[in-house]
Image (tube, rainbow, N blue to C red; front, top):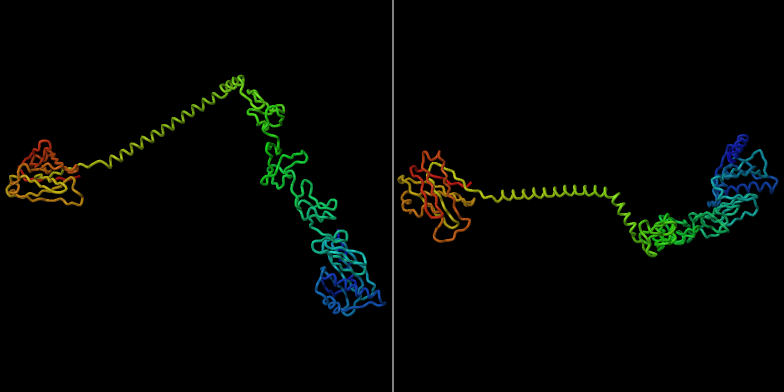
Length: 488
């Protein structure tokens, strides 16, 4: 369906085509358009001849004057002669209303003024047919008996009047359209803005009524149900909770901590008596228990027997299975712990024995006479055994088992003469036997273990000092062989 604006535009187009209108002047101020129409149309009524205008005079008219414009519309002036034109009609286009009227002038040199205010909504613009074009809280422009009013900011047009909008709850109103300042209001009743249904008003705001326990609240009244007269809830820290002595069941507060024989609806209400539940809308002892007063339920003998039978018939197999599984798991865990501990102890002992084991001295035999060197920490005493060879010097490598790594082995060259002067008491003596106490770590090993393969062709000089009786055993003396003692 074509709009009024489309119809008017189509009609104007036909007129312009028939009249060959080509010239166009545009503007945007409603007051200026009404002033132009009043000037050229009014004179037609006041005199027998109408004022004509040229293209340049029309342009000057729209340019001069105040630049302040209260109402902005699209203004178009159509004419077909550049030098002489007369205003013959004025047309107005609004969002839902169109108005067109001829002027008092009639001429073949006609011109049309079109005022298009469809950009302004109906709630802002009002069209009034009255001679007195005055409206409070609005900017009004009139032409002839035609008045157009544009409401000020914060107001809107309501039945030809500009009324205030964006009102909050509690403000005076004429229409519900005004009550938009508070969320969930938008209702004007008895001249006052109120909240919508299911909301309550507080400090010019609307809050949801009958909030559940999981909802957010601000007022205690939000937590009360008016239909069920539920007044035992209150708002704590933004949430609806039951008052003391009540319990929240199914979003509703019910009296709790009831004793025996009190009226109830739910089992949770009978918390005042242990082993009690709600039976027949009354708090009563559960099966197997009996009441001894108004608050206590005790186990009866009949109930005890039944409980034992039920335990034996229903719970014994399950308990046996649990006991068996528990024993198996416990034994397995215990075995793992014992095995781990044993392995750890054995491992520690083996490492300790490896690190603490003392290395024994080893003996390397060579084809020479064996000489030994005994030394303590302070003095060294070398004993040489005389050999049958004459004036032949003997080279002896003296190595003590306790010789420090930085000490180098010593060689002693002894002549036969010097060895002859040595007495038998001094031979192979490794320790000073003059009653001095020796350190525990100062000792000597003289190991002479001759293999049979070595004893066939050479004599092995071995000095073995008997620690028990102080005697010295001498080996063979056929060859001038030497023995080297080495600590492995």
